[in-house]
Image (cartoon, rainbow, N blue to C red):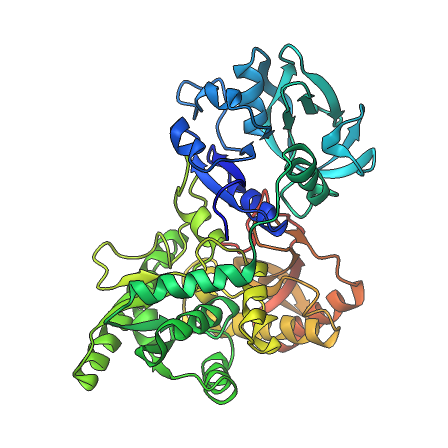
Length: 518
């Protein structure tokens, strides 16, 4: 794999920055992410054939707005500004950016008004994904308008200097023809050549892990989901029997999940897995906790404490190599929502396996999937020969039902949520939709309402049903389920789950919402 002659993405703090780089990799072209304030010599070292300026949460006219060296625009390679990146480029070159009277978040209709290489082969009207509160109202000298939405200038360009800007996000799955737009930039405008592939990534990662863990043992936080299983398979190829997998019952798993998952991992995958029932420890740490950030942090800290206990047992039993590493199936969506990685991105929520980890970690981390997205991980899992049964599993958060149970975590409320969640998954499978949707689950709300059951008054809880379509979890849209499926889910939950008398369906997209509720 070559790390030269690709696309450099300059990060202004956008939640989708890695997604831009990832879409470039989809075209089998190397991409690198650098902070927006990277030095010019650092950018030149990659010998890029093109530069993308990412989106970001700031306003370009703010006093502390993230800035880029204006000389980036003089490097002689094509530049594509996306959202904030377009606004920064326009303002830097003499254009005008102002707060929008009407902000755009979510879907909008783009009308392409002038011919452009960027939009070659793209319909003149298409649905795009917007996420901005400012817009460009004055174009820099030499720039032309190429597209508008109902509320804003949506695309501009200066073909002579090969500078292009779009207010929408072509990198997200919910922008029609977004892949074609990026492909036009990468190949037709930048003239990039293919120089990246999954097989090369796997080989490179295995060699990196082998060097990192030389002379030591590792344990893997294995949950039976796609991410941790693929991570375990990668690390096992690198260090073999020096890896021990640990599956922990944290007390907030779904119905029957602990024993069913252990059987799958041991019997089907033949993995060396230790099952640890730590449910009492976790529930004790969660007692009385309502704040979702505290839930995540306490769960993250307790996981590490459990792994440390198991590592001491393994080291004592082996009387040989120490356990120095913890393997996690952390993905980029976990990272970008938890901490600012490459630029000034906003922290959306602390994931238990990223920002929720304690400062005094007794292990060094091995996270081979940290820069990848879920669908990329599934593809790598197939390259490694993992069974499809594992690869099609829906994502399940590390903090489990604790972040799908709003309010205090109690045994009674957990049983209510487990019963409702089981109904949702069963009916989604029954309808043949499980492998067609990204995630399907129930959420228990701390809300009670009046109902009528058996000619009597009830005052029961509300279950929210969340089913979404997504490609990579960075954006998502609610699934348009058949009404008969929704009807069966609602009827069964109300009839089979005590204390629930109302079921609602969540029709929020991401953004503005997240997929999980907490």
